[in-house]
Image 1 (cartoon, rainbow, N blue to C red):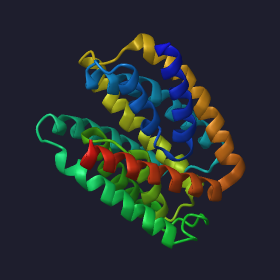
Image 2 (cartoon, rainbow, N blue to C red):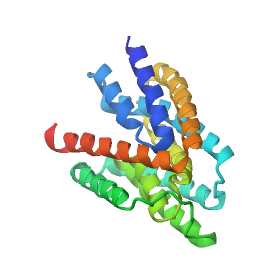
Image 3 (spheres, rainbow, N blue to C red):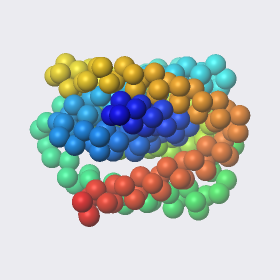
Length: 252
Protein backbone atom coordinates (compact mmCIF):
# COMPACT_ATOMS: atom_id res chain seq x y z
CA UNK A 1 0.00 0.00 0.00
CA UNK A 2 2.86 2.39 0.84
CA UNK A 3 4.36 1.91 -2.62
CA UNK A 4 1.01 2.57 -4.30
CA UNK A 5 0.41 5.82 -2.40
CA UNK A 6 3.88 7.30 -2.93
CA UNK A 7 3.93 6.22 -6.58
CA UNK A 8 0.62 7.97 -7.23
CA UNK A 9 1.85 11.08 -5.41
CA UNK A 10 5.04 11.00 -7.48
CA UNK A 11 3.08 10.91 -10.74
CA UNK A 12 0.94 13.89 -9.69
CA UNK A 13 4.02 15.76 -8.48
CA UNK A 14 5.72 15.19 -11.82
CA UNK A 15 2.69 16.57 -13.65
CA UNK A 16 2.55 19.77 -11.58
CA UNK A 17 6.32 20.25 -11.40
CA UNK A 18 6.79 19.95 -15.15
CA UNK A 19 4.44 22.88 -15.75
CA UNK A 20 5.60 25.40 -13.19
CA UNK A 21 7.53 23.74 -10.34
CA UNK A 22 6.17 22.97 -6.89
CA UNK A 23 6.03 19.20 -7.19
CA UNK A 24 7.65 18.89 -3.78
CA UNK A 25 4.49 20.41 -2.34
CA UNK A 26 2.77 17.10 -3.22
CA UNK A 27 5.43 14.40 -2.92
CA UNK A 28 7.31 15.48 0.23
CA UNK A 29 4.18 15.66 2.46
CA UNK A 30 3.05 12.30 1.03
CA UNK A 31 6.37 10.68 1.99
CA UNK A 32 6.24 12.16 5.50
CA UNK A 33 2.63 10.97 5.93
CA UNK A 34 3.32 7.41 4.74
CA UNK A 35 6.63 7.04 6.63
CA UNK A 36 6.19 9.18 9.78
CA UNK A 37 9.04 7.47 11.65
CA UNK A 38 11.66 7.76 8.93
CA UNK A 39 14.58 10.24 9.14
CA UNK A 40 13.65 13.47 7.31
CA UNK A 41 16.91 13.49 5.34
CA UNK A 42 16.09 10.02 3.98
CA UNK A 43 12.64 11.10 2.84
CA UNK A 44 14.06 14.24 1.22
CA UNK A 45 16.73 12.18 -0.52
CA UNK A 46 14.16 9.69 -1.77
CA UNK A 47 12.06 12.59 -3.06
CA UNK A 48 15.05 13.93 -4.98
CA UNK A 49 15.85 10.47 -6.40
CA UNK A 50 12.43 10.45 -8.07
CA UNK A 51 11.80 14.11 -8.88
CA UNK A 52 15.11 14.72 -10.65
CA UNK A 53 14.13 12.33 -13.45
CA UNK A 54 10.78 14.01 -14.01
CA UNK A 55 12.45 17.43 -14.10
CA UNK A 56 15.06 16.15 -16.55
CA UNK A 57 12.35 14.60 -18.76
CA UNK A 58 10.44 17.90 -18.80
CA UNK A 59 13.64 19.77 -19.69
CA UNK A 60 14.29 17.37 -22.59
CA UNK A 61 10.75 17.73 -23.92
CA UNK A 62 10.72 21.50 -23.65
CA UNK A 63 14.09 21.75 -25.40
CA UNK A 64 12.63 20.01 -28.46
CA UNK A 65 9.69 22.40 -28.78
CA UNK A 66 10.91 25.68 -27.25
CA UNK A 67 13.82 27.74 -28.53
CA UNK A 68 16.17 27.45 -25.57
CA UNK A 69 18.85 30.09 -25.09
CA UNK A 70 21.60 27.62 -24.34
CA UNK A 71 24.44 30.13 -24.28
CA UNK A 72 22.97 31.63 -21.12
CA UNK A 73 21.34 28.52 -19.66
CA UNK A 74 24.30 26.14 -19.44
CA UNK A 75 26.50 28.48 -17.36
CA UNK A 76 23.47 29.30 -15.20
CA UNK A 77 22.73 25.61 -14.65
CA UNK A 78 26.33 24.85 -13.69
CA UNK A 79 26.34 27.74 -11.22
CA UNK A 80 23.01 26.47 -9.91
CA UNK A 81 24.66 23.09 -9.28
CA UNK A 82 27.56 24.72 -7.44
CA UNK A 83 25.19 26.99 -5.49
CA UNK A 84 23.05 24.05 -4.42
CA UNK A 85 26.12 22.18 -3.18
CA UNK A 86 27.22 25.27 -1.23
CA UNK A 87 23.73 25.80 0.16
CA UNK A 88 23.50 22.17 1.30
CA UNK A 89 26.81 22.62 3.12
CA UNK A 90 25.55 25.87 4.62
CA UNK A 91 22.47 24.25 6.11
CA UNK A 92 24.79 22.09 8.22
CA UNK A 93 26.45 25.23 9.60
CA UNK A 94 23.60 27.74 10.03
CA UNK A 95 19.94 27.37 11.09
CA UNK A 96 17.29 28.09 8.45
CA UNK A 97 14.53 29.18 10.83
CA UNK A 98 14.57 32.78 9.59
CA UNK A 99 13.79 31.59 6.05
CA UNK A 100 10.94 29.41 7.29
CA UNK A 101 9.12 32.47 8.64
CA UNK A 102 10.06 34.82 5.79
CA UNK A 103 9.13 32.46 2.94
CA UNK A 104 5.31 32.83 3.11
CA UNK A 105 5.67 36.63 2.99
CA UNK A 106 8.08 36.48 0.04
CA UNK A 107 5.74 34.14 -1.84
CA UNK A 108 2.79 36.42 -1.06
CA UNK A 109 4.70 39.31 -2.63
CA UNK A 110 5.37 37.19 -5.74
CA UNK A 111 1.69 36.26 -5.99
CA UNK A 112 0.38 39.81 -5.54
CA UNK A 113 2.85 41.18 -8.08
CA UNK A 114 1.87 38.51 -10.63
CA UNK A 115 -1.84 39.20 -10.12
CA UNK A 116 -1.34 42.96 -10.39
CA UNK A 117 0.63 42.68 -13.63
CA UNK A 118 -1.98 40.88 -15.72
CA UNK A 119 0.11 41.01 -18.90
CA UNK A 120 3.31 39.80 -17.25
CA UNK A 121 4.63 36.63 -18.83
CA UNK A 122 2.14 36.52 -21.69
CA UNK A 123 4.59 37.82 -24.32
CA UNK A 124 8.07 36.45 -24.88
CA UNK A 125 10.35 39.48 -25.19
CA UNK A 126 13.81 38.76 -23.70
CA UNK A 127 15.34 41.93 -22.26
CA UNK A 128 18.97 40.85 -22.58
CA UNK A 129 21.25 39.26 -25.14
CA UNK A 130 24.84 38.06 -25.29
CA UNK A 131 26.93 38.52 -22.16
CA UNK A 132 24.24 40.52 -20.37
CA UNK A 133 21.76 37.66 -20.73
CA UNK A 134 24.36 35.13 -19.56
CA UNK A 135 25.20 37.25 -16.53
CA UNK A 136 21.55 37.69 -15.59
CA UNK A 137 20.81 33.98 -16.01
CA UNK A 138 23.90 33.04 -13.98
CA UNK A 139 22.81 35.36 -11.18
CA UNK A 140 19.44 33.61 -11.09
CA UNK A 141 21.01 30.16 -11.27
CA UNK A 142 23.50 30.79 -8.47
CA UNK A 143 21.06 32.53 -6.11
CA UNK A 144 18.24 29.99 -6.49
CA UNK A 145 20.79 27.16 -6.39
CA UNK A 146 21.98 28.43 -3.01
CA UNK A 147 18.39 28.69 -1.81
CA UNK A 148 17.48 25.22 -3.12
CA UNK A 149 20.42 23.58 -1.37
CA UNK A 150 19.93 25.52 1.87
CA UNK A 151 16.14 25.42 2.19
CA UNK A 152 14.31 24.45 -1.01
CA UNK A 153 10.51 24.94 -1.01
CA UNK A 154 9.30 26.83 -4.08
CA UNK A 155 12.70 26.91 -5.83
CA UNK A 156 11.21 25.97 -9.20
CA UNK A 157 8.50 28.62 -8.90
CA UNK A 158 11.07 31.27 -7.94
CA UNK A 159 13.07 30.37 -11.04
CA UNK A 160 10.00 30.79 -13.25
CA UNK A 161 9.10 34.12 -11.66
CA UNK A 162 12.61 35.55 -12.07
CA UNK A 163 12.87 34.47 -15.69
CA UNK A 164 9.53 36.17 -16.37
CA UNK A 165 10.03 39.33 -14.31
CA UNK A 166 13.73 40.01 -14.83
CA UNK A 167 14.58 38.28 -18.09
CA UNK A 168 11.37 39.17 -19.97
CA UNK A 169 10.43 35.58 -20.87
CA UNK A 170 6.84 34.43 -21.18
CA UNK A 171 5.68 31.79 -18.70
CA UNK A 172 6.18 28.89 -21.13
CA UNK A 173 9.79 29.80 -21.98
CA UNK A 174 10.49 30.63 -18.34
CA UNK A 175 9.23 27.23 -17.22
CA UNK A 176 11.34 25.51 -19.88
CA UNK A 177 14.46 27.41 -18.82
CA UNK A 178 13.78 26.78 -15.13
CA UNK A 179 13.74 23.02 -15.74
CA UNK A 180 17.34 23.08 -17.00
CA UNK A 181 18.63 24.83 -13.88
CA UNK A 182 16.38 22.90 -11.51
CA UNK A 183 17.65 19.57 -12.87
CA UNK A 184 21.20 20.53 -11.91
CA UNK A 185 20.26 21.91 -8.47
CA UNK A 186 18.36 18.69 -7.75
CA UNK A 187 21.36 16.65 -8.89
CA UNK A 188 23.63 18.43 -6.43
CA UNK A 189 21.26 17.73 -3.53
CA UNK A 190 20.82 14.10 -4.59
CA UNK A 191 24.58 13.51 -4.80
CA UNK A 192 25.08 14.82 -1.27
CA UNK A 193 22.17 12.91 0.23
CA UNK A 194 23.02 9.67 -1.59
CA UNK A 195 26.64 9.89 -0.47
CA UNK A 196 25.40 9.98 3.13
CA UNK A 197 23.05 7.02 2.57
CA UNK A 198 19.85 9.05 2.71
CA UNK A 199 18.05 7.49 -0.28
CA UNK A 200 15.66 4.52 -0.38
CA UNK A 201 16.46 3.41 -3.91
CA UNK A 202 13.84 0.62 -3.96
CA UNK A 203 11.15 3.27 -3.54
CA UNK A 204 12.94 5.99 -5.48
CA UNK A 205 13.33 4.03 -8.71
CA UNK A 206 9.64 3.08 -8.90
CA UNK A 207 8.62 6.62 -8.00
CA UNK A 208 10.99 7.94 -10.68
CA UNK A 209 9.11 6.04 -13.41
CA UNK A 210 5.80 7.50 -12.20
CA UNK A 211 7.33 10.97 -11.89
CA UNK A 212 8.59 10.85 -15.49
CA UNK A 213 5.16 9.70 -16.72
CA UNK A 214 3.46 12.60 -14.94
CA UNK A 215 6.12 15.00 -16.18
CA UNK A 216 5.72 13.93 -19.81
CA UNK A 217 1.97 14.46 -19.60
CA UNK A 218 2.32 17.82 -17.84
CA UNK A 219 4.83 19.11 -20.37
CA UNK A 220 2.56 18.17 -23.26
CA UNK A 221 -0.35 19.98 -21.61
CA UNK A 222 1.80 23.09 -21.06
CA UNK A 223 3.05 23.10 -24.65
CA UNK A 224 -0.48 22.63 -25.98
CA UNK A 225 -2.10 25.41 -23.94
CA UNK A 226 0.79 27.90 -23.87
CA UNK A 227 1.93 30.72 -21.60
CA UNK A 228 -1.55 31.76 -20.40
CA UNK A 229 -2.23 28.29 -19.02
CA UNK A 230 1.18 28.13 -17.34
CA UNK A 231 0.50 31.51 -15.70
CA UNK A 232 -2.76 30.18 -14.18
CA UNK A 233 -1.01 27.06 -12.85
CA UNK A 234 1.77 29.26 -11.46
CA UNK A 235 -0.76 31.34 -9.52
CA UNK A 236 -2.45 28.21 -8.13
CA UNK A 237 0.84 26.57 -7.11
CA UNK A 238 2.23 29.73 -5.47
CA UNK A 239 -1.05 30.16 -3.57
CA UNK A 240 -0.77 26.59 -2.30
CA UNK A 241 2.87 27.17 -1.35
CA UNK A 242 1.88 30.24 0.67
CA UNK A 243 -0.68 28.24 2.66
CA UNK A 244 1.68 25.30 3.21
CA UNK A 245 4.73 27.35 4.21
CA UNK A 246 2.65 29.65 6.46
CA UNK A 247 1.21 26.63 8.24
CA UNK A 248 4.67 25.09 8.68
CA UNK A 249 6.17 28.36 9.95
CA UNK A 250 3.47 29.67 12.29
CA UNK A 251 0.95 26.94 13.15
CA UNK A 252 2.71 23.58 13.11
